[in-house]
Length: 430
Image (cartoon, rainbow, N blue to C red; front, side, top):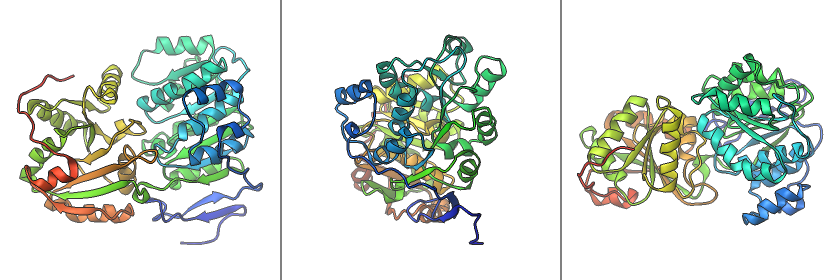
């Protein structure tokens, strides 16, 4: 590869990242050094209301990505942060944008801060996380996502919202209708930027960012930094401070990786036994149809499960997630896209019933567990004809999994996953 780069740019290779270890990218070299990281939220110049909420929730010490990025974000610098899902990215950008817009009232249809996210679920998750902080300083939040009625969203925008959390498609639609203008936005956040580009949102993101004042601040957070993200960085971030403080999934010491070799004829029964374990589990499959088939099979075997994919209505998806988070439904069967960015506390097992398509997908699936220093396991079921491709996948992800041959009902399957025999008594769906 040509090692010559434009002036002011530097080549970055991060061997700990399953994507960056394979693809060299070019990132800007900041002209000014970053501000030093802080070890306590009290050391930051945050409004008293935000510090009070943090104290009330028992949050005093920032996660590494928060401590590293917040001083620079609060100072108005553009920030490029790489951190795996669950590393604390939401508060890293959320506290900054709430603090920077506090005390200023947005005009109708003209927000002051914008957060772009790839999915409806992540938009709601970000909104829920930021609501107590926004409320503490009197800021109004609006969530703008597809799959839900326009009325409430247009009303919130026309009434005035300082902070808008949106998916690119719905926001583009509302702008076209005249319900939102971006000419007053002073802080823009791209959350899970690599996922948005993977989903084909890059043209819409560019169209939206072109409407934001050029002098505004931009914060980009991503689990991986590949060339699709590099193009956004080069075009829209000005002299950004770069922070890469969290290991990729393959380097997380609290995460175990298992490849379970299983005969094709045994896979369905083995999957059901894993699902019947005590405790929650997310099971990933490649298509919406496969998700629905497995969910129906688990219900028929007596395992309470809920399906999550893009073919479900927003109320169905919201209900499935809520019941899974609360523990009412212990098994969430999902496609990768639908579950991206979702945070569930205390989840200790992720199962790839269908192996993911590439190392980046493996990273994002794995990121549902072993979050914030907790322990978790990632299990991938592999039939004989999938072994070679899965070995390449793991190598590309920088993961050295433990490989075990298993069969339904055997002790090894129980030892690794907590598998149990399902009751066999059908249960109703949710």
